[in-house]
Image (tube, helix red, strand yellow):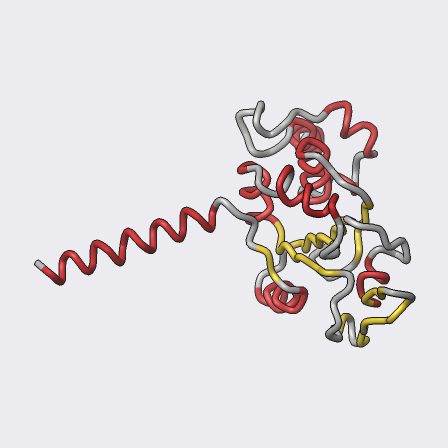
Length: 193
């Protein structure tokens, strides 16, 4: 009886932890995301923030905790939380990037690199499966804006459809019966004709 109770407690504990993890984006370090991408190719999403950035904290709460966003991000991206004032060096594409002191604060050279020299916080960056920067996007993004962006790059729609067209044809995930946005379904039908 004690063994059965122990097994049941272990099973329930594991189930609860798994359910809690499914409620959050699986944030990785830069190094973890790059290593994982060597094994299973996925795009990388980077949230560049600082500890003092109020809009970064607001985006964490208002956008990154929405269940449909969490689900899509965990399935389609390696998500990275990157502190732009990180002090430890990072190697990317054979080059070492370090923290640079500037005035009272400083910045990490890799944050500067992947934002294409336009440091502001928050900035989100989409990177393809081969570690090439697709697009950095500065500023706070509400759930609807972010949903459009993550699917636009996640489904590679940016390769065939202008952003303005995608925005006008977009059907929100929560309203569609599919996790695949309407604009992407339309593009796939056209491609198969």
